[in-house]
Length: 500
Image 1 (cartoon, rainbow, N blue to C red):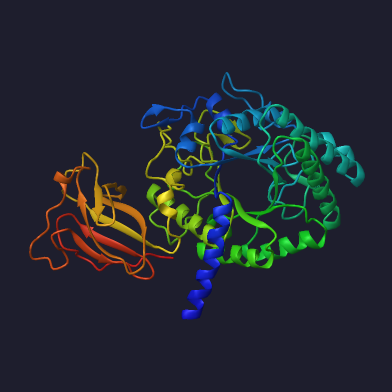
Image 2 (cartoon, one colour):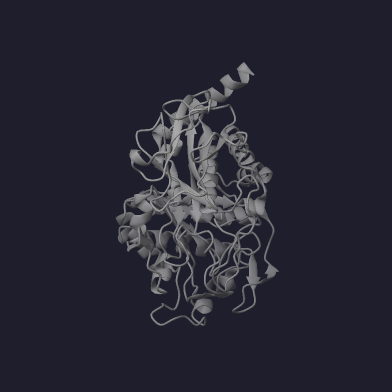
């Protein structure tokens, strides 16, 4: 056990040195923001309208991801939208606006070339309409990929918004540019090729274009590739790319959602550690994830993330935050480069997608679906530095049952290790919760307040042996803990150990 702990310590020290050399990316995909605003969304914080990019930047987001489609006009333009909404989005002009707004807010950017007119994903990698004639001509298709990629990047550089990271493709499990659909349809009816020799040639055409553009531009971007599989398959994905000559990239990116991949955060951490150990010349990053805060659907469009991790129940904003913090701490411990949350501003509006009106992420977005107000208790605060000061610290959740108490001014808690009262989140009924990470075997005291003022702190029963004059006593175990209490009383149940 001692040798195992020493090995873990050494790995963590190496990761810590890596973090000191480059920033960890707390990223958000904001591809929908421009459209949501045109559709009438007014993003707010503390009930007041505020530029949405400033909201994200002020809460620690330092990277914005945006998708680029080649020509989405043919399928977006026929969709009826409210007055004032553009005919189509996610083309080069919309993407340039997103990159400009992100950079003006002080955030770095990741541009995702999907090499399609429509969403590219594991089951759909459609050749864009304008390239269909070249679909079976590999040389012509390579040239199209190179020329398009190069000229897009030179255009963005001339506009002063060259991306910091360029992602080649999107969730390319089965290859890239390898399917054909009927005219004005989205369902593949023909697979061009399953050959990874072909796919590698197209990848390398894009990579050459990025390198060539980067040498002459203000920013020489890092290059990422992107897969989404069961976590155990990523070692094969990585080696397969290298075996077929796709080597000149910087970041191996993955999508990982509990809802679709059903793996634990612990398995995610181990997967990234294994990749980093096997391929030390590359960086590894979660370039797409998301997690829900509600099981409710507030509009007419079906919600696509439906399955919560059973270790993070009940489904509520506070558990969304807890999940994302634990998730990100695991990526950090593994030496990962960052985490990107998919579409936290895709809120419900009168606008439509091909599948209906509204948002498929109204239960995932960092804004409430009624007032579009930033939710302080949800995952929007996941980048806060206080959660990552000590990656070895154990998770401690303080919970208090406020049944029968006046809570009009909020519920707070304070502790011997803190310098001020912390706001507690309402989880369910009258139960409030506070999340933090404290060193193993740390001993201290804590107490609750019905306001942020010290004059509103709870009174302790004199007969309770678990209290002292400073507050409730606790010791942090080696696996985290949930401290469950009831206002002004001794604990009426055992302290529960938090899940991994």
